[in-house]
Image (tube, rainbow, N blue to C red):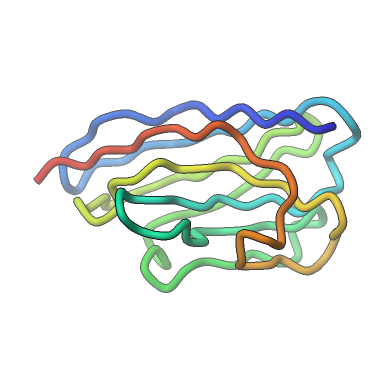
Length: 126
């Protein structure tokens, strides 16, 4: 089993920044593909960003390109999401996810991932 714990969410004004962290523990997780998803009320869970173990592949949703940056520290088994220029449309619960079956390909669908964190709320006020 892999446990994922997110932190760093909160309330921020439009144009502000937040940095989310996801600490992984349990079964060896440093080689897993990691990703961030988000879900706003009434909406489906959507892909935000993903990164593989070797850092050779980073993928972003079009809506966050140029504003969000995903990174990871394999030594700390932690993945980060730096979010800049936040807008109210970014308001959602943000989830960290791990794909224990993949080491290279970064999937963008929720069912590509088999471990999930509990989520952290991000609220952007206008």
